[in-house]
Image 1 (cartoon, rainbow, N blue to C red):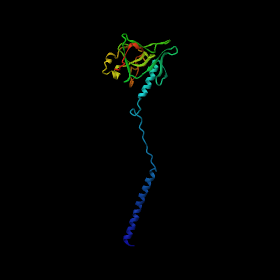
Image 2: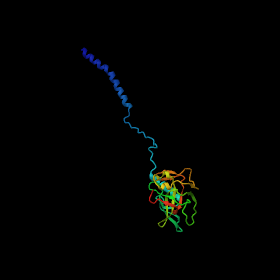
Image 3: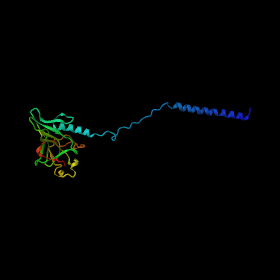
Image 4: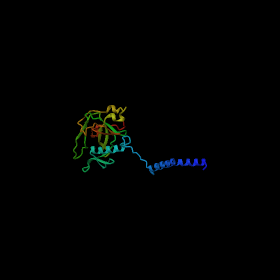
Length: 225
């Protein structure tokens, strides 16, 4: 046999084992890989920064419900604070009540103008009613008006809450807040262990002195601060 041809055949034969090993390795690699691969999506746990904040509407709903309960009024639509009355409807000795729980930028404010101060009451005095004092406010106390009790068109009673003057944005630079502000409060009926504080934009919680007062003891900030 021709020697060059013999050497060529022997070289091809020698290469066969290496080729077989390479093919075996490829086959093993393919069999170890799944036909399809489903990606795993990691879900990050909820954190304080991603949790949904309490909305302004939630604060408003909570504030309205608390006001209805504290003021003792009855409403035909409590969810909206509509159709509210205070007093004895059956005897005709009652008042139509307009509620406004917010004490923020659009709040209605006033100051106690009575020299001897005033007692706040847990209900509007009316036929057969039993009222008790919730606190005594001194002259000059700043209050937020949250309810107006009217007989016809005439406001006769106001539901007020005494709030820290420093928490009222409108007080900054206002001359009215030099005349009216934080004054001594006595005989307060406490409603928990927390001091009166801001619970949301324009809404307060804790031991805030509040109740009904006669309309003639207040200096109303009808033109705002």
